Structures are given as C-alpha cells and as structure tokens.
Amino acid sequence: MSTLSPVNRRHFLGLLGLSAVTVGCGTAVGGGPSGQGGTKTLRYQGWTGQVTPAELAEDLGYLEDVKLEWVGNTISGPQDIQSAATGQTDFGGAFNGAVVKLAANGSPIKAVISYYGSDAHAYSGYYVRADSPIRTARDLVGKKVGMNTLGAHSEAMLDIYLQRGGVPAAEADKVEALVVPPVNTEQSLRQRQIDVAVLSGVLRDKALAGGGLRQLFTDHQLLGSFSAGTYVLTERFIKRNPGTVRTFVTGVGRALDWSRATPREEVVDRMTEIVKKRGRNEDAANLRYWKSFGVAEPGGRITGKELQLWIDWLAERGDVDPGRVRLDSLYTNAYNASAPAAPVSTPTPTPTATSPAPRAATTATATATASGR
Image (cartoon, rainbow, N blue to C red; front, side, top):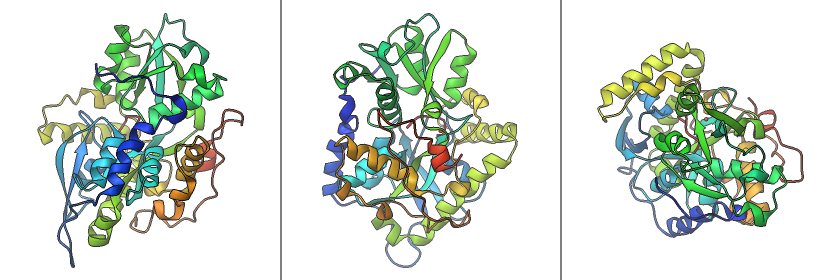
C-alpha cells in the first residue's frame, strides 16, 4: 500500500497545484501534424480491469476513423490530465475540481465532454468495517481514509463531509488521507490498514457482496446526481485537429447514451469482451457489477454549473484565484454533436460548511469508469 502524509483539508488540491504550475509554464507537445486533417490517433491512459467511455466508443465503432493508442494505466485523474497537458497523452480525464485547479495554474486545457458522475447507481461510497466505532464526521479525526488519489474527487467529498459535520479545520487536518490502489482498497480496509475505504462502481459492489462493511456516506448523498469529471484536451491540440476532436467527443457522447439505453447485461457483456480481447492481462470479473457511468446530461454535454461549483468552492478556500480561470474558456460543447445544444446554466451555490447541502443534480440535473477520480 502506497501512502502519503496527511494533507491540510483547507488546501486539499495543493498537491496538484504545485505540479500544475510547472505544467502551465511549459508548452504541450504532440497533437499530430498541422494542416488539414491532423492526427487520427489519440494517445491515452486506461484503468486496469475497467472500460472507459472512450474505449467503449471505439469498440462500438462510434469513433469512425479515429483510433485510440493505449500508453499505460493510471489510478489518478490529476495525473491523467497533467499527462494530457504536457503532451504525454492527447486526452485525459479527471474530477472537475482538478480540472479547474490545473486551468487556474495556467495550463491551456479545455474540457470537452463529461465522462463520469454520480447517480443512484454510480457513486463513490465511504465504507467502514461493520464493527467500526466510526459513525459520524467527528469520529474520523485521527483515522485513515484510503482513496485512489489525493487532490481529486474522493478528497473533495471527504472535505465537504467533514465541514458539513461541523469538524473544525484544526481537527479535520488530523484525518489522514492515504493513496491506496483501487484494487487493493477493500483488502486494506478488511486487514485494518485503513479505517475508511472509498469504493465506487464495480469494486464497491464486489466489496459489499462480501459482507462485513457499513456505509458511512456517499458523494450522491452530499451533492445529489451530477456529472463529476470531464475529458480535457489542450487548446493547441484542438486547434490543430478540430475534425478529430469532433469525431472523438461526439463518439464518446454516443457511447454514453448507448450505455444508458441498452440493457445492463448487454453493456456488461460488451465491456467484458473489450477487456478480454485487448490483451492487457486483466481480470474482467469485476465488470459484472457495473451499473452506470453516472453522467447526468445526454451525450455527456457539460453544463457550466458543474464547473462553476468547484471554481467558487476552491476560490472560497484560497486554493485558486477566481480571476485566473474563466468559466467560458474552461469548457466547450462545440465539438459534441451527440446531444442537442443547451444554454449555459446558472452557477450553483458553493458547498460551504454553513450553507444547506447543495443538490448538484437538482442544480446540475440527474461515477468512471466506476472510480472516484
């Protein structure tokens, strides 16, 4: 199990911010040849034992002449979008708060489509052992919480839960967030290496099927149904390859809609075949627990409120300068032909410790593959 030292809850994205400054100062490479046509191959990172919306879109034939080139796996959304920003890959996906943080630190990225979210079926849950004394936010002080990465979705939700539970900042800083690979999180909890495990999607349902665990809270309980993460590309890549970007984004949107309209068993069978035939020495058994990607809007269309929520929240905590990131330049739906155009929505109130719980699904309409990013 890989661990990191405790992170100050008031600056939960500081880890990403340090590296984002470096990214923002550089120039992203890649993007294929300039001129008409551009590249037709998109480099990306996958997730072990899981099928991303982009991979599903390719298998369904929705990417047409655009091909995906797998360069390795990741367990971290922030790392994934940094790789895209620096040109190591052509697109990456992460929790929207991480996208905001990276853009605010000068990285020329743009969100183009939502790819995971939280709904009644796809959500990140925070679980303890059935015999654990932990039952409230205050009980987490001094405890260890295992999650896939720091500075992203799971830590943001933990931070909100502690605030809503009335835990003072000084005590919240004593809650130790640790990095644990998703495939090892359940085992780490059962072996008492951590006190709380963040589990989502197929890994969550598999763990619950084994019994002996109790839910503490979920991101869906905190914010309702909402699209939580977006795929991003660099502005340079988009400018050089507009046709490829349109084909990619539209294809991913069609795949998301296909997954909603198709019987779950058929989707699971399709994903299982994808994992088996791509030859990455993975176990596809967990896919039988898949239920939803959790994306709220048809075709994965991005609504401004889904990003404004995190701009406001991070600015309130001093993690970003609101003048360093503009909502209208942070995302675009211009390349998504898979869903009807929709107006930019009114920003959602920020999730503060003193305000009522915002309903991002009511405010953002009603997670990654099935991982909290």
